[in-house]
Image (cartoon, rainbow, N blue to C red):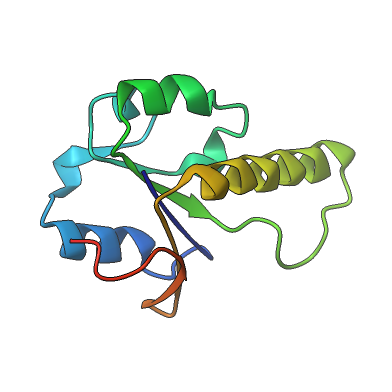
Length: 118
């Protein structure tokens, strides 16, 4: 499994599609779709995802998640809890991932893993 993180609009999905050669039709947008598709974009929308179940079904999935912990802290407690859930999910996934990359302004930064990934 590979984890790609970065801010909204930073080019994470475009980067993954370019590197893999996959098309937009191969991108999952829900956990159910992610069980069978090679890329799962929008992970931040699913903070309560059962990562064990997903990775058992699709161990080579490329996960893409917007960073939600940077910027202004939300006033509403529910939004703060959601941010924390997403952050903890990414921590668990990063620990298990073979490779973790952060995309900033379309440029990749390897946080974990060595050598090219495709």
